[in-house]
Image (cartoon, rainbow over all chains, first blue to last red; front, side, top):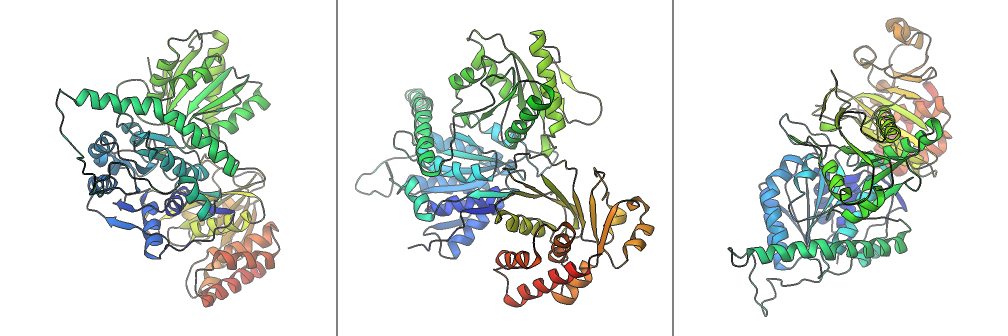
Length: 407
Length: 185
């Protein structure tokens, strides 16, 4: 029996420490990991918890991230609660196996500490790795601060392991800006946290020798399409209601409210930015200041669930504002930003007259300052007043040298 | 909102100092943030760490800061790092040095006319802790200059923050904090 740990009601934790305590509290059976900055402390802390008797489980050191996720897949197929963490190039090396995990319908929780992908080599935070995961069939939840990184891990296990879902889930946090930034985190006692997620109930587990099953099969054109359709059906229909139910239950337990789409100051907003990660919180503060100091009715929409994309909820949140800025923290390499595309797709068949523009910012950890956000909101106000786009469609914010824009 | 910037060399404990301060402040019901600029910094490289303290949850995640306090825990950084970057009119500087405040300002004219305090945290750390880890003494000096908390309360809180260290090291840190509190000028 694992030892319990006495936590203070509020611990000053960075996002990594918060995530590793969540993994400890849900008593993961197998963590297989390979270290990479900035996610290393999650599995390093977890290894410490395991070695010191706070976890009844196995910690497996692998030869690569590809091996780490492969080991997670094996352990999940065998019938265990499984988790790991990675970032950046390590995430990229995992990609092949991510598709296996989701296609095999294995509930695995992957903490992704978002970091730029080289070249050039860069250890700091942007959303390139998160965006790379978009089509992998995983659920993707996004944290804006260390508290979220703690809370969303419980949600991820609960939803991912639900027998109606059985899909793996990523919990994202911004490299360094969340992962290495210490802030107050409201904790749950070990038993309360464990009870919220519950005991792991395996399904089609390979170690159930009385009921033999096959995992990792080959299907060609006879069945592949039907398998992928079932996977998409689960991701599209089962996941959002289960996340909503988990958010409701979590609010009853903790008082902390999460939503599929987070809307701040949106009731009467004329202009809004849409973003992810720590930028959501900084933008919330600036939106308040735009209202108080500049008389601009500014709002913020934060993406909490990136996959499955909450198309209807996004449309409902944004259709009544006059101008929207989609803020993408990843180089789109040859097109508009992913959020711009997703938001366009969400609004296109509605009767909205809103004007949508795209901002690329923060690559490789470049600071998104409050001054940048003031200039974005000011642009959006001009678009709202003109009823049309008054700036280039895609602008680079916080870039040194001459201004860069496209379209 | 109270904002603090630390100038340090990687390995001198600025991150630990910033997180320790955040830990103590958090116990008094205030909201905190502690972070640092990382990169592929090696031991000895100049680096900065940051604290934010507020009565409400700190939602600002920008790295840009106009600090209320600048804490310099390596003497040479006064000359090689931009310690006055983004300063305010009333930014207060606490600098680790063997020099007096007048001597320091004479050697670095850009500190002229500013609120500058000096204390030799390196020497204090060497004489008490036995290593040149100037982070905890700097916190003692900050308590004196800022009057943030009563020094006895602060030391008691720091004992809890340092609780995983051997008792001898904790005791030495307490002496170091008190000495810096008494000696900062």
